[in-house]
Length: 104
Image (cartoon, rainbow, N blue to C red; front, side, top):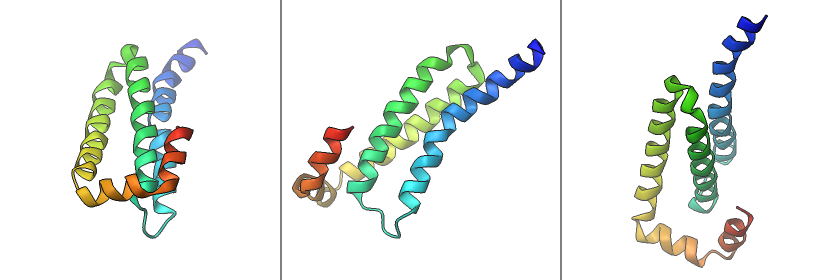
């Protein structure tokens, strides 16, 4: 019984790591045309969650590298999006963006 509980621990950590990615996919794919004002808060929440999970995985060495790779990939997507002046202007000029950021 104890061995079974120990074996479930890594899978529960994997689920904890991947669950927000599933929710983000549902949010972004729920719209035919997700905009940066929708995607940016999702990026920010994902980064916050993944970094938190990454620090909690010190005893799950098999999940640290995938978590790190996911963080790096999402960070690169965010950096690429913010390099484009049109996206940056659209976010700054969008009045709902300020409200969304305050909610995070």
